[in-house]
Length: 280
Length: 96
Image (cartoon, rainbow over all chains, first blue to last red; front, side, top):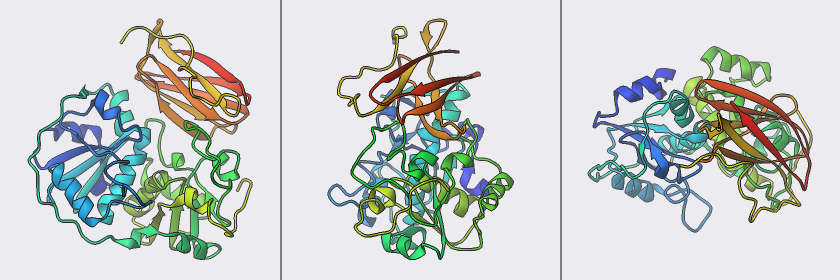
């Protein structure tokens, strides 16, 4: 696995917009962004409606993922290129789903929607939705080697790398949610003891593109994260930590890295688990 | 879309008393600019980022204290320092 297998430039995407075996998929936190405009021939996956179980707090299951990709006209042998706003937070989250369900060739557009917009590249009207014939997509069973659950996190305290990728103010307990959202009060503020606060944003340049492998490795080494050890990344709901998972597992090739999708909205609501307040 | 609207987005439905709101607009020659606004904390660390609305507006729910707003638009980056207080909304007009 190397950077070029999982990350493509805006120029590369521009050159493949009419390639029938390359499916560009927009996944945005603001699920209506696609309706305003999007990259030509891109389809949309709605992270709320399409990727979550409608009742329980859990993912769409294997059969649901198969039905979703079939309806979107995505085949098992298609190259899927994901992009979105917020520096690819939710595109990274969807990337992690595609890996969780075993899709062969999936990539991120480096810099996502922001880089595309700052380059003043073409976006088409939201009503222009490509027609793709339905497929019979077959997903694999969930690869839980890249997914952490709450008991894994409690067991990792003091034993494994825990990387809290939220902003310093969320880590210390000063904020409960990213600052573009109203501040929820349902959980206790703070972080998992022994977690290191390495905000996801340190992985990216201002334009949303990822830093170089050397810069990324230096970042984690400077924070005393032993990359030879197992690592669990978490944030508030698992989308920003999917970006850090992408960096550690896909770009830097670390083998045992899990994303804890329950993240702080689950951990901060658990009865009796240890919580720490304050900065690193 | 018509021209820029002065100030930040409408506050209807927002719990202003309990939030610490930083909001405003990004304009160039009086016209709204499509781009992004980042919120950086007192140490300069990234805290949040939003795209501007069609009328150039943005809003953050922050905490009391000193912050920096950084507007990223095609061809320009502009920083503005702000101090926010709970129960008040801080209006910032950014021209690029």
